[in-house]
Image (cartoon, rainbow, N blue to C red; front, side, top):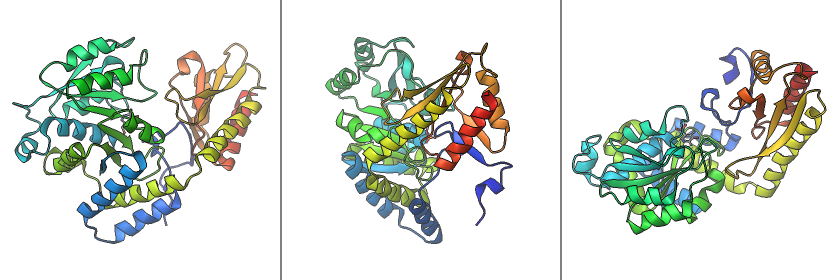
Length: 368
Ligand SMILES: *Cc1c(COP(=O)(O)O)cnc(C)c1O
C-alpha cells in the first residue's frame, strides 16, 4: 500500500498539534480498517447516522448526535438548524433568511480564526454574527442585552486555546440564553476530552472535530438536543449537501469512539506527562534555554513543552530554531504562535518514543 510520505519529499514529525495543513492526526489501526471496509461496500447512510447518534450520545450524554463533514461545517449547520428547525421550505431557502431569526450572538474574544474566521462559518448559513464586548472582556450583562433582541437565533460560544481575553462566564451566559429560549451552540473542535462536561454544562449543540484528538477521518461530530440534531440532519436537503459525512467518515467515527472508550484515561494522561517531563529534563540543561511543562489553557489533559530561548545566550533564536527544524530531514514542525516572544511550543501527544528521540536529538544538536 502506498505510504503517505512517499508522496511528500520528507518524513514529517508533527510536534505542532492537530494542525490541518499537516493532515491533522493519525488514526488507530482499527479505525483505518473500518474506513477500508467502508470503502469496499455500499452503506445505508441514514442507518449509519442513526448508529452514530447512539454512539455519540452514549459517549457525551447528549440526547442525540450526528456527523457532518468537519467542525467548520458543523458550525454552519448548527446555526442553520437554529434558524430553520426541520422546516423543509426554510431549509431549502437558505442562505436567504427573510422572516427568520438570524442573529448569532458571539463574544468578541471568541471570534477565533482556525484557518478562516469563524464569522465566515456563521455567514455561510445566511446568519449574521453579532459580536459582544471586546477582545479584553465580555460581561454576561452585555451578552444578555444582545440575546434579548427578538431576531437572535442562537448564542455561540467557543472553547479553544485560540480565544482571547478574560474567560466568559459560561454558566451565567447559558443561563441567560435559557431564560430567553435561545439555544446555545458550542464550538469545542479540539475538546473531545471535555465533550461530556460541555453537554452537562448546558450546550444545546456541541461541535467537535473527529480528526483532531479522536483520530477519526475528517468529520464534524455534532452532539446535542434531539430536535436540534434532527434539524442539523435535515440540512442535508439544503446547504448541508456540500457538507455531508461520507460512509467512510461515519464508519471511522463509530470505530474511533469505540477505541476512545477502551482507552485508560489515567494511563494515557500519565504517559503524556512523562513524555513532556523527559523532554524538559534534557533540554533545560542547554545554554540560554529554559524548558518548562505548560498545561493546556482549556484544561485538556496533557501538557506541552515550552522552550523559552534567550537570544543573547542561546545559539539560535526561536525563529531560527523552528526554521532549522522544519527544513531538516525528517521535517519537524513546532508551534510558532509565540515565536515573537522567543518561545517555541511542542505538542508530543501523537508522537511515539522513536519520534521523540529524533526530535530531542535534533533540538539538542541545533542548540548546543
Ligand atoms: C479546528 C477548529 C475548527 C475547525 O475544525 P475542522 O474540523 O477542521 O473544520 C473550528 N473551531 C476551532 C476552535 C478549531 O480549533
